[in-house]
Length: 258
Image (tube, rainbow, N blue to C red; front, top):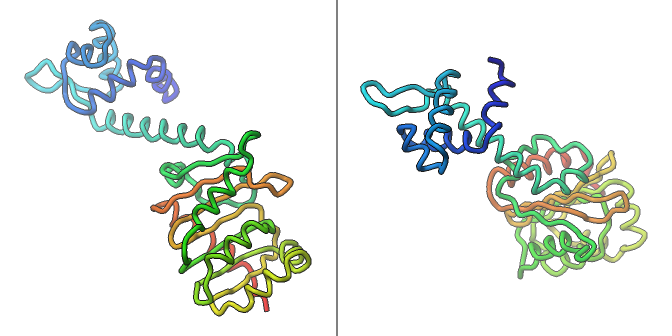
């Protein structure tokens, strides 16, 4: 049997997946599996026979119980990971659809525990409000960011929380720098006066946003009009590690602004 045939067999019935998971937890008789999975005994027996034919299960010596083989354990584990990745892809489909640019190593495990927000016609500001919520604190010790747009709201939120000693590193592209200088010169001047502030200019246009506020990471996706339309954020690994590595990569490709 081919891999595709094995996949078709497993996903051809939700009961088969349940039986595989149940058998993974402990050896059992087909009749016990039928009771636990609420299926007919004939279905359980036929499915277990299918597992044994594929080398996924074997009979426990001197008993009438079955257990998964190492091959069966791999199948069960891999299917669980696959199902989890499908869930991540579904939950973050709006973020991923609008996430332009080089987003290296953004795997399903990276997003699995993240909080999702997205703009809707009823609540178009949900993602930016989430970012402002993360920045709403008496003081910020560390703020690292990559932003493809100029935002008055973000400037104000940063001004309220950033102190002169805050370790602040911000990466923008040339268009954003020029727009900031023209439209918000006071914000740029205020930032220059902060002892802990460093501005970097990317030689390439930036297409997504990354903000790390005191160890909490935020990833933002923008539409063609520069609106923040979806985001993910988390304060645990591997999301924060990914955000730090992504920020460092973009910063290292940029030049410090004088």
